[in-house]
Amino acid sequence: METITEKTVETLNDLIIINNDRLEGYQKAMDQTDDLDLKALFTMLSMQSKVNNVSLRSLVPAGEETPDRDETRLSGKFYRAWMDVKNALSSNDRKNVLSSCEKGEDVAKKAYENALADSDELSPDAVATIQKQYDEILEAHDKMKNLRDNA
Image (tube, rainbow, N blue to C red; front, side, top):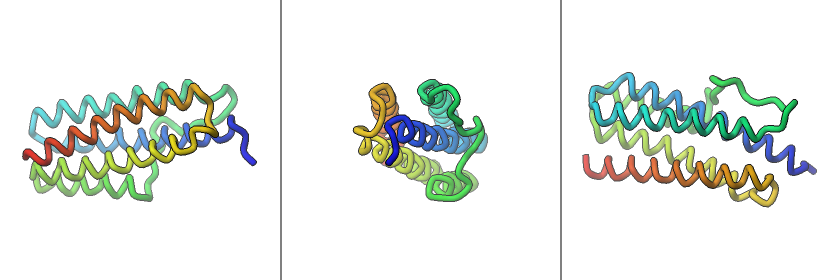
C-alpha cells in the first residue's frame, strides 16, 4: 500500500507532465495563429502552466524525482488533443482552433478531477494547490468554450 507521501509525489508528477503538455500545446497554438487576441490568451495560459509547475514542484519532497521541465506524454489523449490544435491551426479556422484547445483543457480538467478524487490519499498542501489550479483550469476551459460558441 502506498503512503500519502508516495501517492502525493505520483500525483504531483502526473500533473507536472500534464502542465508540460498544456504548455507545449499552447506554445504551438500561439506560434501558428495570427489572431492577436488568441495569441494573448495562449500566452497567458502557457504562463499559467509554468506557474502551476513551479507550485507543484515545490510540493515534491526533497530527494524525490520530478519529471524533466520539458517532459511530456508523447502518447495518450492529451498529446492527441494538442495535435488536433495543430491541425485546426493549419486550416486557420478560429472555431476549430478554439474547439481543439477546449479538448486539450478537457483532458487537463479530467487529470485534476482524478487527482482531487484521491484527495484523502494526498497531503493537505497538495490538495489545496491542486484545487486552486483546478479552479483556474476550469476557468480556462470555460473561456475556450465561450469563445468557441461565439466564434
